Structures are given as structure tokens and as C-alpha cells.
Length: 225
Length: 246
Image (cartoon, rainbow over the protein chains, first blue to last red):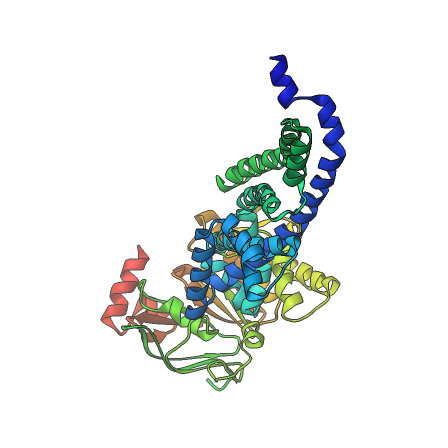
């Protein structure tokens, strides 16, 4: 038992590793601040293209979405970081992660936004167009606000997934939380820093998960009217 | 009818693929006239209304509203549409906006009015439909009749030359119908030109200048409410009128 606590919950080691891990946490947060808005914007673009009146655009979007949902994000990331240099494109780890995540997340966020847009009845758009709003204005002021509200829990739980996936960045030597924790583990030869990293992820994501659950309940209740 | 024509429909046709919904409709509406459009479901009444502002794209024919050809290629449809008020059977209010927000959206985005100016206009129009005190309410807090009156206000705020009503009372509980009809009657008294798809025979008798019976994509017969409901020329009209009189 004593052994177990020494290996996994060594508080002294955790305190010692904390500054390094906090620095990693900072990079993780910075990464999230980049990839979440990028993914949301990309997803919105994908959803608009996917519900466009132009058939070729819808088909191209479908191919894009299917492709990037089928490629494992880790494969995509390693390809962007280590594969593209063979084509003369050399990216720093941060940019490589942003690009790989943009492609992957746009597909997922895009599907969520599309479901939201399709949940809004045609009557809304008819009413908007009948008052002289353009197709884009109808989308922007009438359809999208309702669509986003309807899929808010899904957007948020996908964001939780994205935050977790940022740990993949460790494989391209971006010094985010997991990378820092693993570095501390190899220096101390002890698993406690990894446990500490897990606790930090938990502290970061648990409130978000609670919030999603609350939104889901509230939306479920209002849909019942 | 020597008066100026507000709506003029000429040889209008509409097809969905193989199916021809409108088979050459001619119809005219003079300024301040109120016409009722009746007919069995699937006869093309709603489609005809939607062709007037090109929410449906007609396959042939012309529609002219207040001197401007709606069906002309390259016409500024958004500026024209706001001159053609439309009221829907299921209200179609924007649920994420208050009554005021519903009325001001097009004022601000299409007519480019400032928020203050748009709010002013919206308040006075909401007052006109008897809902000034509900300006801050969201649609789900309003009764069906109130929602439909907000929908009328939303169209009215844009100062349309004509108002199109697509079964405005048929989704309402009977006790709420009169509120909406009262607003329509008030509109008529102030000289609004109106084309109404509805089977409210009592209202048609008391308020309509003209009733047109439509079946199978054409206008079969038109005349005064008394004549159409009391002594129609056409057997099909008589059969239909007998049905809805129950």
C-alpha cells in the first residue's frame, strides 16, 4: 500500500513537478484558445456549405466531412507535422496541431451545426424571406441563432472532446500538459506527475461536463412544451 | 374597375417537376380591395400567394405588384418583398426574439432603420394590433391569436402595398379567431389591399369585396360573397360551398 502511494500519489514529487505541469497546462489552454474557435468557425463554414443550394458544393462538403471523420486525428497530426516536410512544408508543432485540428474539428463541429440548421423548420426561412431579408440575412439572424441554441449541448460536449484531444500534441513535442507530465515522469521515474496531469484535466473539464448536463436538461425541458 | 390595380396576375403557371399546380391563373386586385380565395386543399391557393412574392418560382406568367413586375428578371426581390406583407397559417414568428424583435428585424436589416427608429415604428404597429403591452414577450408566452397579430404587425411595419394572408385563422382555437379577424377588419377600414386564403365564410360575407373559387390550379369562378356563397354559377363551386358551410 505504502508502495502504491509512493508510485502514484507522491505529494512531494507532485509539488516539485507542479511548476513544469502548470506551464504545460498554460500551453494546453493556449492551444484550446486557438483550436476551439478555429474548429467552430470551420465547422460553421462546413455546415453552411453542406446545406447550400449548390449541389456540387454539398457533395464536396460531404466528401470533406467523411474523409476527415475517417482519418484518425493522430495519423492526421503526424502527417501534417512529419509528412509534409517531404513536400517542403515545415511547420512548427503549434501550427501543425492547429492545422490538423482545424481539418478534423471542422468535420465534427460541421455535422453538429448542420443538424442544428436542419432542425429549424422551413417556415422560419419563408417568413424571413417574405419580409425582404436576403438568404444570408435569414440564415444569420433567424436560422443560426435558433440552430446554435438547439445544438449547444452537442457543441459543448464536442469541445470537451477537443480539449482532451489536445494531449495528442505531445507526440509532436509540443510542451503541453501531457508532454510536461511525461517529461517529469521520466526524470523522477515515478507516475505521480501523470496522475497530477490527469487531475488537472479533470479540474478543467469536470465543470464543463456538468454544464453540458445542465444544458441538456434545460433544453429537454423546453422542448417538452 | 377603374381604380388603380395593386396586384395583377397574368397567365401564371407553376410546376413541381411533372405536377402542374397552377395552370394559367389571371387575377386582378384594385387598391383597397379585399378578396377571398377559397377552394379545396391542393387547389393551388397557397401556391398562388407564394408566387406573388416569389417564395415559389412560377414557371410562366407575370405578377405585377404596385406597378412593379415581381417576375421580371433581375428585379430587386428583397426590396419588393417587403412591400408585399405575408401572414402564414402557423404564424412563423421567430421564437428566439421578442414580439418587438420580431417586428424590428426587417425594419433594421432591410430598411436599415436605427434601433431607436425601428423600436418606435414597431411599438406603434404593435399598438395598432392591440399588443403594445406584449412587446417584450417571447412568442411561446403568447396565445395563438396574439402570435398571429404579432405576425401581422411584423408585415405591417414594412408599410406593404398589399397583404397576403394564408389561412390566418385555421390554426387558431375558435375563441381566438375573432381577435385576428378584428385586426384584419381594421386593416380593411384603413384601406389596405388584401388577398386572403381562408374559409371564414362569415368574415368573407361581411368584409370581402370579392370571392374567387379556385380548383385544380385555375380560378373557376369569382363574384361577390353573396353570389358565390348564395348562388354560384358553377356546380363545382356550389358543391364546395355546401361542404364548407357545415
